Image (cartoon, rainbow, N blue to C red):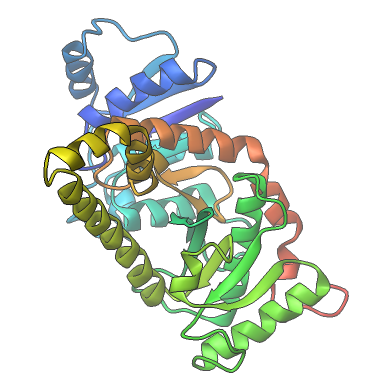
Length: 345
């Protein structure tokens, strides 16, 4: 297994990607890693880490350009053909790597993955699949993107994609799919939500997916579903709210436990549990999110990823590559069409 890493993408590049690759190599010694980016910059970080020579299983692919956040997302990978992002995606396309990890521009990565690595034939759009914490573990959200048009067919396809991802990559048996809405009743929401509900109910009746109905954001966090589909605006607001709530709770808890000597003693006794609590809301523990619907594994790490996040993103790329999820999606693509006939053709 060989995973390419965008060494120039993210807020803390090249330090975080390079250090993350070194950590990943220690944790997953059977995985070869290719650092893609400006070679001298990469070697400078290695020297600072006390590595005068490249560790076994780690190599460098020189790429002289960098896709910046200010670059036009839709065309950046074309205008900068020797960028670390473009070179890494081409490696996956050409079979030189089994997966690609980048913390660079989300729009540029999605556009480049769509046009270079290609979507699975028959899918209308690839989707990011971020996970969020729930009372029973975690769930995955799929939406149309904050600034993108959302349609019934997109939401139907995302329900299938999320279900496959939970089953094949996260190991959830018979994932429960919910539709983000303002209430649980079937008639709630606008025309998009109501028609999507009917399509998902039909898919549930055929046994294609396990649809549990409309889900409010507060219920989603209680763990009533494993997959939630939403329009881009609503989904983005929900995720940002969860992130903010996690930070607020963490801050309040810290202030409470540092209030006096007694609470400090309690914090000492509870340090193991507090460490686990912090991990639940730490995006670095997740690493990134897969671009579902792309024919080969591409992982988007968050922009502020540290070394641990890159290490976990490498793990995700390996899991997606080994899962065979792309084959399952390609096989069942006809089930995801809203104009399918009764026999699925």
